[in-house]
Image (cartoon, helix red, strand yellow):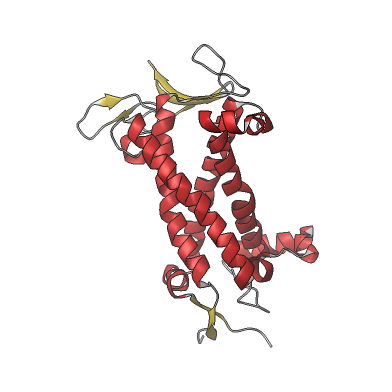
Length: 270
């Protein structure tokens, strides 16, 4: 059977490509430096206050049985990965996250905070620059606007089925973003990244004094820290799913599209 006809389209504008690669580095550094910061107190609480004697809704630690992750009353064995793991020199460590997942790799809270705050500025101002550029090139209006018919249960289920069949392009308009792409990108751009920025600000003592309403908005400083952690986990999940879909849909084609802007897609049906 001859291969299906394809064509090249210009899909990703320059501002989108720059922001994509800057964000790729920025979020990885933020996740890894954040993991080191979390190692200093691997417990999460709700409300304004939280200390070792207070009940935590999430904890990564170790005991005689090994490393574990506890969420509420549920305990998950994570020995060798989280809570207790073996370092390259053969020594057993009891930090929440292993050294390969943190920046810096050795325990250094002060340096981790410097990395985290520096790249948090890149994340915030990068998002602002991307949104301003999108006003001029109309990227969000043309590519990410959700239409009512796309949000019907039938249309959503059809898109899920198409993904399961590894068909990622609309046959009538191969250059368009499908509804699952739109929902995920809109969720990341307008919900997750702003949330991780503002919850990060709510944990800053200086911002607490300047904007005390921000802490109250999230229900307390410890609640802001918990939301910050949850959003970071969702961003990590988005990255993993995104990479898997890129591999399934053709990594070389996707890489070319995000470097040059040109993407090869199936020929549109008549």
